[in-house]
Image (cartoon, rainbow, N blue to C red; front, top):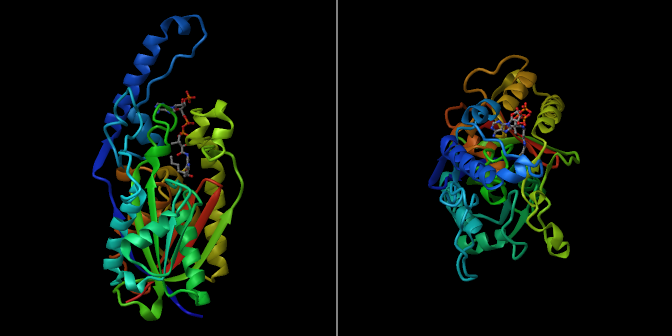
Length: 374
Ligand code: CO8
């Protein structure tokens, strides 16, 4: 069977960062104004007073300290509390395509690839800017790639599901080299007025080159040993935004048209699901978890990753065995495990075994077991 490698990754990081302090300040200004404007109704018991957010809670509950965003001014303005992005004409690149090209160029440089080497472009992410034409086809056009492209969405697991898709296409012989990009503007579908979740997400774009081993010229590429995907339906992470919203206009603008979750239930249900997925997958590949030199886990919550690490390794992970980036980037949905992989893989040695693992809405989870080449 054809061997397949990840030969390059790239990260486009937006220029604006928002600290927890800035975000909480905006949120609390909004809360104080809301409560002041509704004092009488609150006193009559007709309206519930809003509670303030806290920096200490955010760090303790999630490990998040800051997040990058495509627009900061709208998010931190208590009158707006949403990103404000310029309307682009159809003759300009769309914003998701623009971020994708930035990340793709870095991954292609890392993999020694030009657009002529790429046969397919997958845009794999949580939220697409439009239904059609596919963003992937636009990225393909902007880069000058021949072949084909398509979009796919499996929420937080989009990147790992994209890697399995590329791996399978390459092994079947239909393509030799695939570019996967994960443009995530999570701020566009986050309710910054919701105390439970306003701190969770950030924006970023990652890119991955997956190709046949015999075409790979990059040093330190990672051979894909095996992949495993799982999905299990749950309403605990949900977003009801969609093309049928205009058919039920009474629901337009309601809270469920943005990200909503039962965070505690997600935590409790996803940790065992993912730990078991990793252990079963490794057992089926004849690999012992003790052999893992590093896990690049989904970046949603630090304690969640600590639990998974302990379950898989049977002990507390050593520093560096499962690095986190969520303190700087927050949860960037499908891009999180790829940012971590991109930033923390070059120090490992030939023959070292690692695991990229994502999990999230669906529920969905995806494993990619990789071994370092020379
Ligand atoms: N400030 C102060 N206090 C707060 C705040 C706040 N901002 N928010 C809640 N509290 C209070 C609550 O009111 C509660 O108080 P009390 O105990 O008095 O009732 C207390 O803090 C505890 O609240 P929670 O139980 O909600 O807090 P948790 O400890 O569970 O932490 C987390 C909340 C951080 C959300 C945590 O549950 C978590 O991270 N869970 C896992 C979530 C997860 O992994 N989700 C995956 C989502 S990502 C995904 O699938 C991609 C979707 C597509 C992308 C969408 C982009 C927008």
